[in-house]
Image (tube, rainbow, N blue to C red; front, side):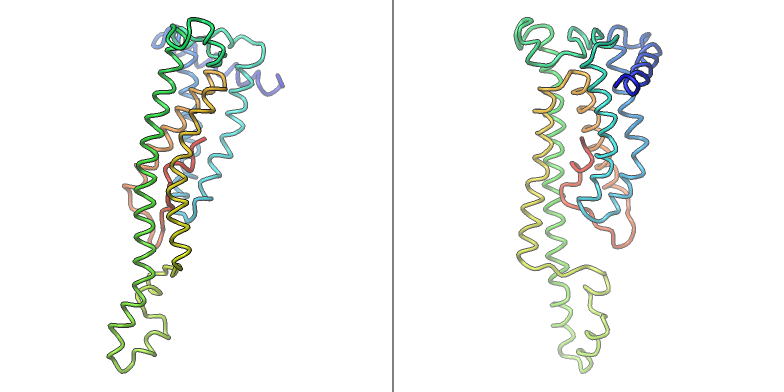
Length: 254
């Protein structure tokens, strides 16, 4: 294990040394945030490709590529080593929430650090859920409009003599736009999936409660990055015909 975790520990220690003049005793926590940001910057091209993309599954690749980093973070703060005693304010970065409950309870000095972490994760998860539901509603409306467009086009052209030939040549609105016609069952499934996916962000709260504080800090940073990145990408134009999957704000968060 040390073959992999030792280089990671040295990286965290080196970055903490650079950040110590700014972050003082919380320099290691600041180094974790910085490492998370660097990882997400490296994965940003994949997130851009997923935003042009096509299905919610396309957002799983950035998530899967983060798992080794998360594993290294977890191992570095759960095995014996120099990082275990480093702190974020009063709480050790290697401590878990249920462990600090014996050190003054949930409102003790260490417990308040975890409550602050949980509160920040809850805010990000709520933001993600709101954006995800909005994206699901937009996607469902677009699918319904795409399904209705060929029928409207056929009705408008029904009075014309060459309506059948025009429809056969693929000149209808839906075919020209390259949008698939969805059945009522498919639209209902899209609505249900879009309403459930945003709630997955709240699962991060459960994970943060059972992993070391360092790993919880990584989860907060990467989740906040995912939601902010998706909001930024949604404001930018994407390629012609590209769709945005419902609940996209959640897809690349760990």
